[in-house]
Structures are given as structure tokens and as C-alpha cells.
Amino acid sequence: MNYDDFADLYDHQYDVYRDDQHFYAALAERVGGRVLEIGAGTGRVTAFLARRGVQVVGLEPSARMIERGQARGKASGLNLEFVQGEAQTFNLEERFGLIIAPFNALMHLYTPNEQLKAMQNIRAHLGEGGQFVFDLYVPRFGKMNTLRHEGETFYDAQGARTDIFLVQRHDKLKQTIVTEYYADTTALGGQLTRRHYTLTQRYYTRYEVEWLLRCAGFESPRVTGSFQGGPLDKGSDVMVFQTRGAKESV
Ligand SMILES: C[S@@+](CC[C@H](N)C(=O)[O-])C[C@H]1O[C@@H](n2cnc3c(N)ncnc32)[C@H](O)[C@@H]1O
Image (cartoon, rainbow, N blue to C red; front, side, top):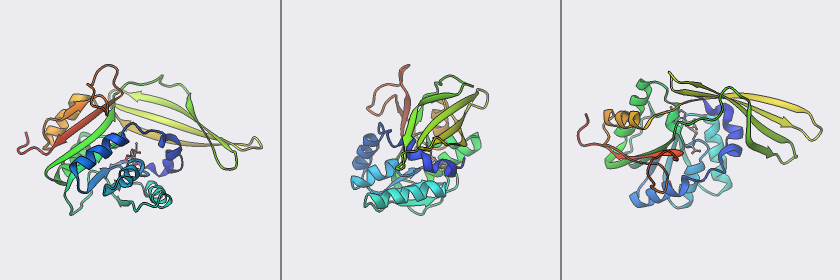
């Protein structure tokens, strides 16, 4: 999945999402040392951690997302460190006490092979006793096959207005949600231009993640249904997994 097409709009859409930032920052402060963030995107969490004095390396496959992350760092006077690469194949010499994958970053691993390869590679980059912590949304979806507007409207400096419309399609057998986005920009004179881009997410169930972690050499995780530590239940929007490398894997 290449996020290059999304890079321009990503921050408009998701900079307002803050639910996870204090959780990851507090964790990083507790663990200490350098943190590796998988799927760092444009540095939404990376910058929040760096502002609190955490040394963080952001792994990200999309060159354009990294560019925007670097621009964010510059604008905030932060020296953000990004490495271009994918979870399945990155290879760093450093070992980390904490690896995080915030905001559904693992939903771009589509096959069991990719998922296992990524988890094993993450495991291999943990130091002794190191932790791996990530969150995924709970699979529950809005109305499918219907053009929707979910209140995403932004204005640029010239006053042009962009509205995001989306259509989602659910493939239950592949466990994927394909979202087609239509970004309609209306200039002040009324001229309309449309951009289209597609996002495919492979969603997970709780117990498949638990098995995946075990198979990749992690301990049985602590699973919560919020960043505040509440239980995973019918009302939860997120699943937060906290685990460590197992001494012996299954
Ligand atoms: C939903 S965004 C989350 C970005 C960022 N973590 C945040 O919280 O705003 C998912 C990110 O995962 C990245 N990604 C996609 N495939 C990946 C892979 N195989 N390995 C690591 N990251 C990947 C995307 O490029 C994208 O930046």
C-alpha cells in the first residue's frame, strides 16, 4: 500500500486525532531509551514523542509521507529521524526497548506471510525484555457501497474548500475494507476539481492477533479496549496490544 497519493491530505484528515498520543508518550517515558515507530506516516505521533524529549526513529515506506514528516519537524524546531522501509523487511543494527505501531499501521499487511514476516522482524529488533505495543481499530463498519460525507471539510489559505467523500466496500472473505476517497476542491470562483484515491485495510480480530504474536515469538499480550486501559468490550473502538518478546516461542 503506497501512501504517496494520500500525503497531501493525510494531515488535514488525521492531525485532529489525538486519542493515542499521551498513551504512547507515557509508555516511551516509562521504558526510556530510543523508540522505533513502525508506519510513522507524517510524524503525527513521532513529533508528539520528540516534543517530550523521547528519541524516536520513524520507519515509513512512503517517501512523500516522510517529506511531510520532515517538514513538520522543521516547522516545530524538532529534529525528526525517519528511515524509509517496510515492517516486513527493514533491517537496522540497533535493538530497541520499545517498538510501537500506532493508528492501524499494521493494517497494510495483507497476507498471513506478510503479517508473520513483519511480526518476526519486529521481534528481531527488540532488545532483551523489549516491548511491542500497537493499536488497531475494532472491526465495525459504516454503511457500505454508499457515497458518504463524514464532516471532513478543509479550507486552504486562498479560501478553496475541499470536501472528502468516501465509498467503502467490505470483502468479508479477504477481511479487507477498501475505501475509495473523492476529494472535491471548490475554488472561490466555484470551479470544482476532483481527486480520487484508494485505501485498502486488512482488519484483524482480537484472537488472530494473539495467535500471530505467539507464532512470531511474543508473549501473550495484554489487550485493552482503550488507551486508558479499559477492557475490550462491545463499545470499544480500538484494540490496544502490549506484549514482549517471549523467552521461548510456540
Ligand atoms: C494509518 S497511517 C498511520 C500513520 C501514523 N502512525 C499516524 O499515527 O498518523 C499507516 C501508515 O503505515 C504505513 N505503512 C503502509 N504499509 C506499511 C508497511 N508494510 N510497513 C510499515 N508501514 C507501512 C503507511 O505508509 C502509513 O504511513
